[in-house]
View 1 (cartoon, rainbow, N blue to C red):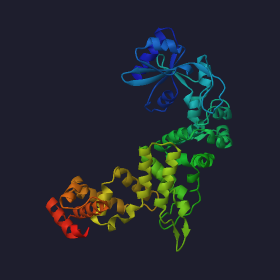
View 2 (cartoon, rainbow, N blue to C red; view 1 turned 90 degrees about the vertical axis):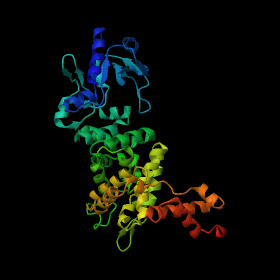
View 3 (cartoon, rainbow, N blue to C red; view 1 turned 135 degrees about the vertical axis):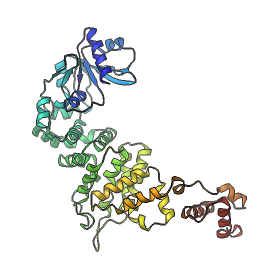
View 4 (cartoon, helix red, strand yellow; view 1 turned 120 degrees about the vertical axis):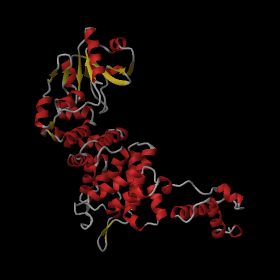
Length: 435
């Protein structure tokens, strides 16, 4: 990708225009990280960029942005600009094409505001990005209150960058975050949901959750998670502390999770505030069931897809089933192992244990069973179908589900191994004249 990005810069330079790498790719290379993409800024107007390259996509031409496609990779090429007023806390109502320094000074954080000349191999830093990298801190470019008012989602991005890189947040920037937190409620739930996923799948998500709480942002975007703060748990199972601390520890243990697993870790105990009871000890009876409903509501509020919502809901609703695996009937255990995305359920259980009592005996039991059983033993093809029941003289109806379920149980237990055995089982257990 870097070679293609360099070719784009050279093409713009040969045509008489300035061009530099900008933003995250400059930051990441200075940190010794491999950039995931390369953005380019240039003095060339959008129409000129379009004419200079064979494959382009105009995704934001009014804002000076053209996508140049090279070897299947998109590269954002943006004309230097200065932004007009922000009226919606998201984007400027107008832009004015300007110079390189003005373009940099409108950006969010100093570590994202450096330019790199790949021809001269030189960093251009007008905003103190290298200084803040050395100080390991996140600082806005210019007045933080103004930067956050321009795009309120920058508050969540500040948290994401601080957690990802293990940085602190500069004092003035932190104060502005705290003072501006309530204004995040004006941002669309969909944009908040997208940024939340970036936070959760990134490094040190638990630290990010703590920062969201400390700055007041958590109560604005996820009041249900805020309710976990200070909620006591039985110390014999949770020596780590309250539900919020447990959740943060789980998030910090995540390693390149899917968005669904990360959301499952965040929300797995979301039903505990509603089910808290002090009996012989602290109890949260059916918090998994209650939590699944709340998790689904949160996912829908954040405009996640129905598939993602269902997967998160199932992760939350099933996370307590692992406590019973050593006492399950074989058929019940096999059904658990055959669940879609079972590897995520198992990983959620492992993280749940590591973030609390640390015992992995049930996890190891399941791992051993998965090695003992073949895929066909866990989820064998059905021995009979509804058509077979009709051929036996049964009339279609709710009884079909009961019969087929009973056959499947016996098959998973190893009691039935052929269609003939299954049909004999049905005749004996469900006489056709009694159904």
